[in-house]
Image (cartoon, rainbow, N blue to C red; front, side, top):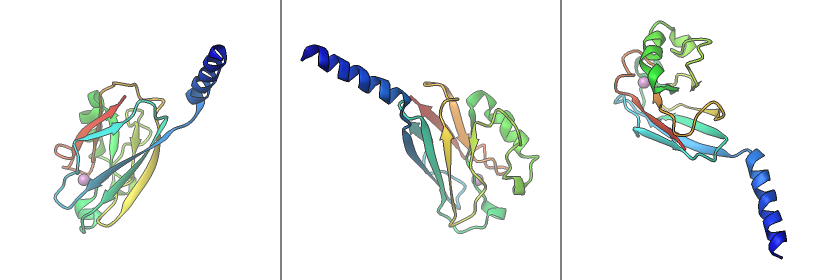
Length: 148
Ligand code: CO
């Protein structure tokens, strides 16, 4: 009995290590240029995060557009500044920039965007920042992504 119990436990551990676990993460942005949280939490056992950004305001994206860009905190300011040189059509996100770990598209009031982020490139306990890269927004529309 005892040995069988250990075997079952070992098999369960083995299967959970390869099983995908998708975790939902939600974030709201508004017409007052702010997110509804300064901290996004993703459990360490998640293998991917399904992130939904919802713009609960009414203003168009040309005036009050929002997105979510995720980088290491060390890269945040450099990427935010580089984003200022990118067009709205490209979501204010530098193209082919390895520092950008994930990003949604740019949206306006009443819109939402959902992306799936593989978490294998995120370290548990690492220091990550999420922000809106619309020009002028990143200094206030930012927070920490906690993975672990
Ligand atoms: Co914004």
